[in-house]
Length: 409
Image (tube, rainbow, N blue to C red; front, side, top):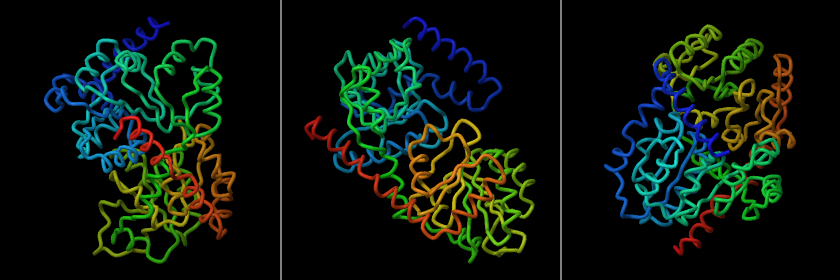
């Protein structure tokens, strides 16, 4: 089956190369990997050992970031390398100050894996949540370099647990230790003969708890909100925005802050059409004051969302009408009950929040209205959300303790 895997990698390379001609994200993907080993050689001394962190994208970076930063605080002499698969992670964190270098991960071929191991000289590799690459895992295993998976989560429908998933099960056996989010993941790994797994929980809880304890203040946002209750709509897509527009029409006494997942010019213009009573963040000034028509603030830049939740009473999290919901925990950590679309089955925290009474999933405008009224009129839902996050912290320290003992730090 390895030959099929190798063909799939080459086919993906061809498709992404063709796509790069007319797709900006694909272009970043391809151009960022051009001459990658020369870029690495300029920054990384292969004679020195490194701890290698790999992340699929920005979300996984934020998930693994607490472990990375705690290790660096505890052991500042250690040199760290970061790789990303996706441009959405690399382009935002390419200048991350705690790493010796931040790079795109070359596509998974046997030759690339050998070159990366030689260039990075890793004493330990830490991959977060979803990334499984056969040649990289095999190369680490052959060199006896321990590989950890942190915040891992497994589901019965994944290829590892299918009759035809032999190659992918072999990847699992290359991993030195798994730190997983739930009991189901432990049980699934055991079902295929993997016993080196620890139920540690999800490191994102530590990250969002710290973020909520140190909120960033913004005079601009405070001026917009005034004394009104505020709904934060985070990481939204067009379907989400259409629903929020109807909600805003029905609740003129509320302010709404819409932070879309994509902030391209065309998308922002479409959002402005949905919210004629709105104003762009880049155009809202302290001097302008809060005019009566400004019920909605449209965030047209990156990096504000995690601090916006400090100003909300309730949050709507986007993505649930597409591939899956975005980060609910950032809002919950600030004590906001959350609403999201129907596609949340891959997210344990979403299921937990619904069960606790701190969240609701919706499929249409009527359900959104009912969920909004139910969650905004209850005094307990925010506390339930915050208590849930606090009860799940601690994974970062557990993983860092394991790493320290393993490396004899």
